[in-house]
Image 1 (cartoon, rainbow, N blue to C red):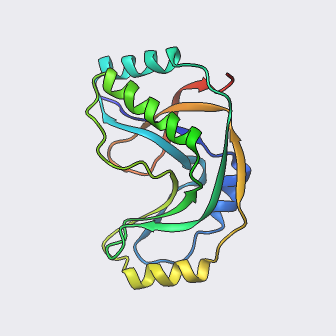
Image 2: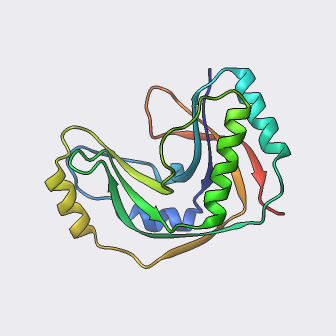
Length: 180
């Protein structure tokens, strides 16, 4: 069974800038910049029937124009028990609409509903139990912000991931142009 998700790729020039945020943080496993992406819909381990139905749905999805995105800061998921360091993505109605379409396509393909609230982001590091909230807060303070990073997503990708590692490496199984 493949582990799949849909998302938007991060251009190499933007990934290089984000990679500069890597730092000494106990308990952090930094994601390789070539694996940076904005997840639209995590599907998980799905059988081939669901995978093919998702692909077919993405091929048949209505045409959409390229999507302008802005990465605007560094944040963390998990609060007092931090789980990941991330780059935040400015809210955009077109991005929210694209996510909703991917949720519908996933459900139509037979995937279980995703009950988590959509919070667009780029994961920069996954944190283990050794990462304390105090250390993460210090990292966030010292890493500083960055000017908004703007790019245009010209395609959606269907990614596969190795189940055993989490956080990559990811492989683009198929791509669907945003050219509508």
